[in-house]
Length: 82
Image (cartoon, rainbow, N blue to C red; front, side, top):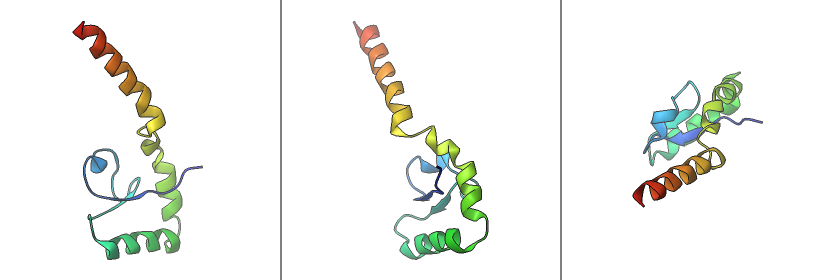
């Protein structure tokens, strides 16, 4: 089951999530904006469902997906450095 994403617009998050397409992104530290974004998910017909369907992209960046890639990279670097 996919859930809609509401996150702050910091770091690398905007590199893989787009506000209004697959997430709601808000300014860092803006509690009121975060509340408004969550309220919209609860009240705007279809928004949560649309973001959830489009949010599959976020699954590609989960720790379960990224960890094996890091392990392989570190193994490659270790082998190359010898």
